[in-house]
Amino acid sequence: MKKVIIILIAILGIGIFYFANPENSKWFPKCWFYQLTGLQCPGCGTQRAIHQLAHLNIVAAFKYNPFLFISAPYLIALVNFQWLYKGNKMQKFRKFCYQNATINTYLALLTLWWIARNIIGI
Image (cartoon, rainbow, N blue to C red; front, top):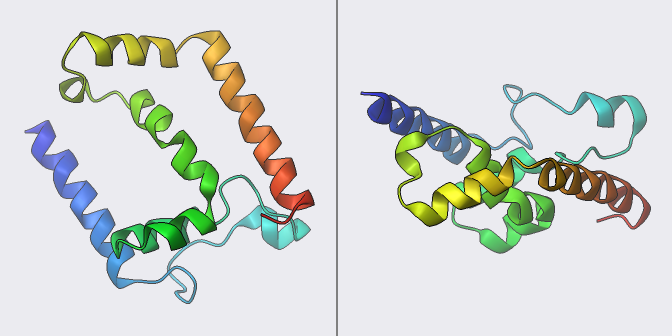
C-alpha cells in the first residue's frame, strides 16, 4: 500500500510540474534568499528544472540547476524507500551515503556550488 501511495504522490507532483510553469505561476513559492539578497541559493532553479524534466527537456533542466543532476543519485539514496533498495550493491551504496565523510563532502560541494554560481553566474 505504501508503494502505491508513494507512486501516486510522485505522479501527482510530476503532473503539477507538467501543467504549471513555476516561472509564471503564483502557486509556486519563490526563493526567499534570492528575494532578500539578489543572490541564488543552491536550490534556485530546481522547480524550473523539474518543470523542464516533466516535459523531457533535459538540456533546459540541466541549465536551470546542474548541481541537481549531479547530486540526484545521492539525494534519492538518502530517501528511506526500503523497497527501492533491493540487492547488495544498492545496500552498500546507501550505507556509503550515510558516512560522515560522504555527507561532509556533499555539503562542501553544495557550498562551493552556492559560491560559484553567484561569482561565475552559472
